[in-house]
Image (cartoon, rainbow, N blue to C red; front, side, top):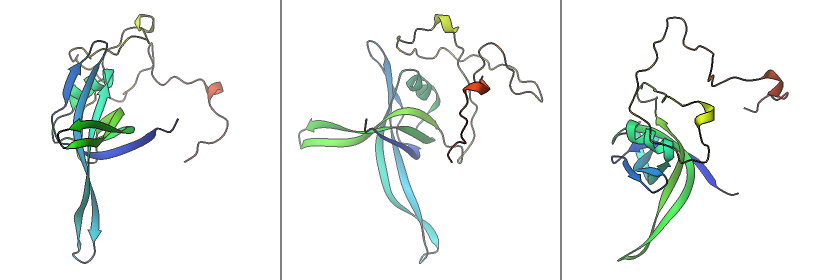
Length: 171
């Protein structure tokens, strides 16, 4: 498959719009990414061209985007680049679009609090079902000083050393 995967760093330029469909939901927003370069003649940074791109986030990702992202927020979007085409009164038009598989805040420009939604047990989850819109926000679990992670039922990063590759990771 020849998908064009990319990561774009920029700002949200309009409020995300959540649309519920028959079997799923999607959240759309537009973002702008402006390149900056140092102009040695002027001894300052100057803006170069701006990429304007539409972003679509499906299912649970889209629900989290709708709850977390606002106009003006600095974001990082990872996904597949496509071209959306349509007919207008001025002829055929097109625009770049990213089908996001990850959206997050740009922490180089601020900080945030992360909230993980409560999950039902593995036996209750249906992998073939459409992703649900997150429920109302629940209170985060209380953290204990000196302990920010407790292993137990539902541990996220459990690894079996026998399953790890024997060769070093590529950097």
